[in-house]
Image (cartoon, rainbow, N blue to C red):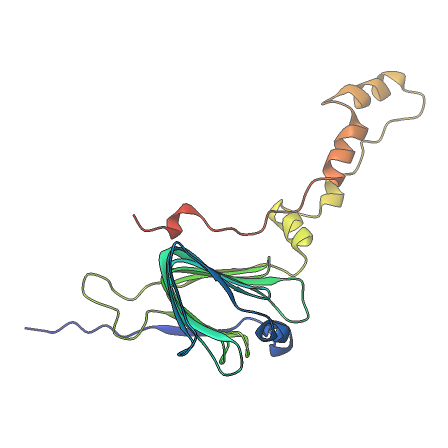
Length: 237
């Protein structure tokens, strides 16, 4: 009888340069705030256990889950293991207005190493231009390197290694919207040529399909494509 063996498939991706992907250094100097339905914090040991609608915030960092077990580190950052449906993690990137966002059924966070590990139905978003999905994602915010695939030992006969999917849009989201529409929007803004003195043609051009100026204004004011967002598939059924 043959034994089926599954190897963890890992793909390493550099999401950004370290200078733009690091956690905000100022966050660890901020107070650690927490809230939950039950639980508390042991000041002597520097550990806490929160259950029910649990949230920890520190500066721009926000971690929300059904349950969070955490500890305060020597550098005033914190480390935590959180579970929920889903757990959400959000933190601003240093030197940028963008945020890193993560969603999974379980998240392990190490504040000293700036390491975020996502388990089961994992989704990682970096700003409005990058989105990655897998069963397991390990993201080092200090280096900007993420590993995607199946966690070691998690693959079974019933659950083989997962596929990795991702979307990386151009930095100019507006330009990306033009490409999706099938060409430069300026080409579509060209107005029909009306011979001088041809009043009927002018009337037809003005009335056909509504006010041409209003149509042009509508195209010019069209909003850029919406950022990628979490969907219902992230929640376990």
